[in-house]
Length: 426
Ligand SMILES: Cc1cc2nc3c(=O)[nH]c(=O)nc-3n(C[C@H](O)[C@H](O)[C@H](O)COP(=O)(O)O)c2cc1C
Image 1 (cartoon, rainbow, N blue to C red):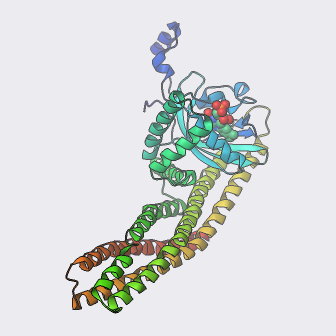
Image 2 (cartoon, rainbow, N blue to C red; image 1 turned 120 degrees about the horizontal axis):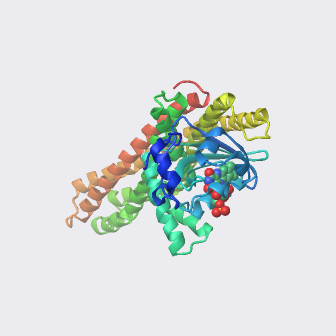
């Protein structure tokens, strides 16, 4: 990234050269500018996105005067590199009364550009957007994703809705189940990145939010793999029964055991859907909790900063703008707390669902071992049964590993979530 402090002073000689230039400097036009981590932007709009107010950082970095900003649509600073699909998703969420977190490239008055990570939330008369400097590795990835999406928008003439869907698809390929999953991950990474860059200690709620997000991440592949594994052994009992019918004239022990295996297997498959639902519910609770914890933190910091601000859009009452911000911070904190309690409740259900799944998988394994004992007693001369049982052993071993990891993580979440929700140090 091209790095330059926006507030840097231009040396006199350079300023003189610029004075003499008649054509705009192309390099300067495409230049990306940086701003310090401690700078936080704020803008307040009406329901249509028309700017009502903002802080000094917003005015300074954008390069516009208040007279140009106030009353103008926020698209005044829209950069042409931004995919329409991002704004489609952005407005879909805002119009549904939900907050949104996203990376945005903006343009300055002199046609340079700057990136922000923006948190936008609904308030009574419109929306408030708080923005920080992004720095995580995810930001780098998102720049690539946006560039690819913008190219597709141009080449394939994508509608904003189609572009939004393409964005969600790309995020899914990158491992994010939905946009909330991406928001939680990006918010926590940008928040922790900024706090570290400022040399501050991570507050415990951010540390815990980051921890929950990390502990849960492997679960997504976990549940998909469990479904794949259980599906792959679905036909095993039928095959065992067919072999048993050839081996045992009258229904013998292997046939009986394989019947048990079938019943247990059916139970497992039936409860997989429930297990997935519980997994999705804990993800949803954690993602919302994590995003709102980060949102509450940045808004609270913004409120503190606002108290020392000396500049506000002219004609506006400074105190009422500060109150609006404080109100938004309070709502975010309340929502963060509600989601944390939901997460705590959900984590207990999730721990139970994991334990239940583990019990069923163990019972399934016991029937396999019984089959193996019977096969050792009266070996199948074709070796077919032995092969089926060996494969079952491998698959069930993997299932047991997966479930143990999930059970361990769910115990961690359950024990920490309550304390976390109550705002106590874990
Ligand atoms: C509170 C708030 C903040 C916004 N901030 C930005 C911003 O920083 N940059 C931007 O391009 N659009 C921002 N928008 C979205 C714009 O209103 C607009 O949808 C976007 O620039 C795309 O314009 P278009 O849909 O006319 O192409 C913001 C909207 C709201 C409500």
